[in-house]
Image (cartoon, rainbow, N blue to C red):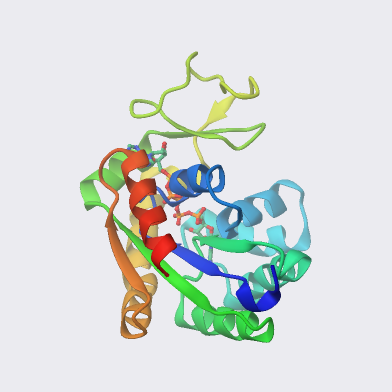
Length: 221
Ligand code: AP5
């Protein structure tokens, strides 16, 4: 693959819309590099890296981490293997500044955003998904106490690690994350719609149906 043919896709949607779940299934079916800024930040926090130390307080409150931090880690990630694979961004961009930064970074590699898939889910479902989410402390696998339970309660099927609640899935933080999403991230919907790049996908049902909908759109852009 030459840099010119490198493609970039974005999964957009509210906290709990299922971006991470859909991305994990997509990368098993398509040759994609999954770039989740949330996962990258959580890893940096866990390892005590400077980026993590700067991000931690924002994440705990459900606020967005500053754009310069995010654009720095994304650029670094793309530079690592630009031109070798296509990219699937999950949870990024979240602001106009980040969207413009992504356009510039991709342009420097002769690439652009090819498609933005907006996962639509009613608010009541979002809250239910976030409050029931459990994450493996070992490998990061994501479960839901009711919708996608592990075989043994509290234990990861994949690695046997302990399943815990993400600190930002506490009720008060969830409420703020949804407010922040409405205030800042929803503007991006207009940004991408105006460019003819936005495809809305109903993500309230079975995740395999959502994944099939995204793949169908991906093949067309
Ligand atoms: P991030 O990690 O990106 O969180 P988010 O966008 O709030 O999204 P989530 O990870 O909560 O949800 P998801 O859509 O991936 O849902 P999931 O698949 O897990 O960001 C966290 C924080 O980091 C931010 O608040 C901010 O501070 C910072 N940050 C990250 N990126 C940033 C950026 N670009 N700029 C600035 N700050 C940034 O599913 C949720 C649950 O539902 C799971 O339990 C799952 O099992 C279940 N589920 C999923 N799909 C289905 C389905 N179809 N049916 C039933 N259950 C389902």
